[in-house]
Image 1 (cartoon, rainbow, N blue to C red):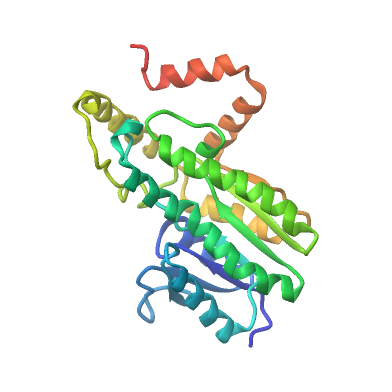
Image 2 (cartoon, one colour):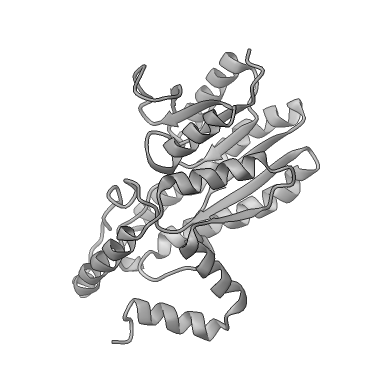
Length: 270
């Protein structure tokens, strides 16, 4: 059994998850990553466990394996998730909406329910959920993704209040655009409507421009480490200048200013 603090990072095969696992390892944690397929020995700089966050059985098996290996879990980073390519909200079926929530939100619920009993018994722990600034400032044509991240925000805040008296703290990291494979792995809407063809083409250009100026995943990973090591962690941490700007606008700007800015940026009234 290790004397190091033990961290589990979901969705750690690339992007923010992989960068977070590497930085936590450098900070002194014994880190395990997860992906749906696991990883062959030597492919990553940290051990990988097979885990599908949409499966109760897979979650239970991965946590049991980790506890058999290390005997404890001090930090859970819920990073696994996916997005939908920009499109009209009505272009996704109910089945597609359920699939998005099953990973982005219910996956966090499953992981939390699996680790909290162990953290409670050991007298403390940290849970850090990778949210999005779109969970604070929703934007058009990614309505379902925004909704899933709003759910993460509300769940995390309530959960932190519940668990704080048991020595367990919960935080949310809110990045904006990040240079990862996330955007390239976005799922296309499964019920496309011809009326949205033009806006989908326009949005591809808008997203491409934004991604050219996006933050590196290491920046968000650094914020995760900061939250994990904070003596008095905050509930919410933004990551990157774009996210901070959006957060300030949401907090201090009149609603009409933010509304007009979003409509202008997406050329909704042109």
